[in-house]
Amino acid sequence: MPFQIPRGTQDVLPGETEKWQHVEQVVRSLCGRYGYEEIRTPIFEHTELFLRGVGDTTDIVQKEMYTFEDKGGRALTLRPEGTAPVARAFVEHKLYGSPNQPVKLYYTGPMFRYERPESGRFRQFVQFGVEVLGSSDPAVDAEVIALAMHIYNELGLQHIRLVINSLGDLDSRRAHREALVRHFESRIHELCEDCQARLQTNPLRILDCKKDRGHELMATAPSILDYLNDESRAYFEKVKHYLAVLDIPFVVDSRLVRGLDYYNHTTFEIMSDLEGFGAGATLCGGGRYNGLVQEIGGPETPGIGFALSIERLLAALEAEGGELPVRRGLDCYVVAVGEQAKTEAVRLVYELRRAGLRVDQDYLGRKMKAQLKAADRLGASFVVMIGDEELESGAATVKDMASGEQMKVPFGELAHVLAKRTGREE
Image 1: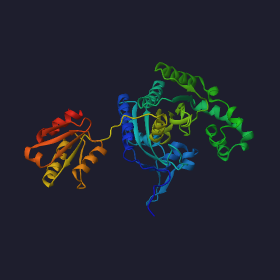
Image 2: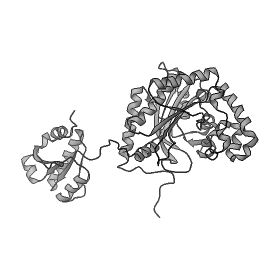
Image 3: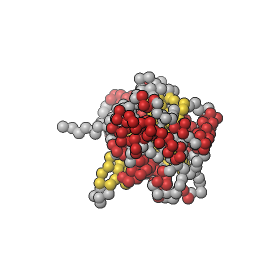
Image 4: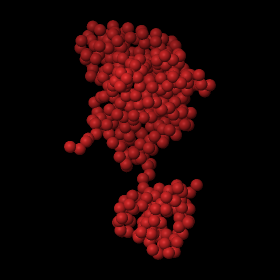
């Protein structure tokens, strides 16, 4: 029986990888414009990092982590998210001592969560995210949100909606927590087992429950916005003010709590509003986490960031019928007839590649007609033909596959002529 791919994973084949490369190129370019630098962390970390950094009451820690014991008896976990590893690197390498503050970082790479696979959601998925560490300026919150929106706008997504909320500071959250316990405790038995367990450990997360979202207790639950103290309220007003200055439309949703324990003050999600894709489906989420660095052993450091799934981004683009400007095909395909011509073709292909052209040749010993068909299938803009006549004259026959025009070009001038005709001339 042939091997099959594990459930919840995918192979990204040629024809699709170009889309991924384009998205990655766009996000890297935009991060550069905003002054963010790339960081790369290990695919696995010590399990304790996620227990403390993500929160041991979260679904990620309780249900979704891929955890294993290595040969030294250490508990390790495939990273389920990117913020805690970035914060760990920030502390371990003392980036808080850098003269360039705040520290603005971005990352991209595979994450792992054991959850039910569905469209655009996998157990191994590629996440892109940014983190800003070292500033509690509300303008940074607006910048992070603006960058996330800019990415979707740049890639052509149309049906998106920004939703924001504030979880307030520690005092505001404490007051809201007490109100939530009072609200739910007399009827907590009506909710699912997860909600019952969360009542005393993290009642805010009851509002994030997918099973009981339609229960009347959810609709009447106390709003965090009613428990914001003056400082938290002023902070949130500043964030909204800056978003308005940037002309970025948003909706305030007091039920938006996010799924990780380290959030405070600003939280946000970018959702798809496209019917059929799953209106209200979350594409991107993030928020402020001023206590995370301190929680994992670093100095008190404010932070904010977001993360998005590349898979869900591409699924949303496909659902909208959007086309990415990806280019496939060769600049040139070299057709050789005869052994001497084949030798010249090997040399010529290498020379043209070194000149910056996308070039290939036949490696199956096919006849000229079959080679020309291969060139057409591969989307070659030009075909360079070499036979006895071309070897004798020292000039190749070059065919423009779009117009059918043919011309003779000396071997020594091929790189220059083709680079000019394909627009790859520097």
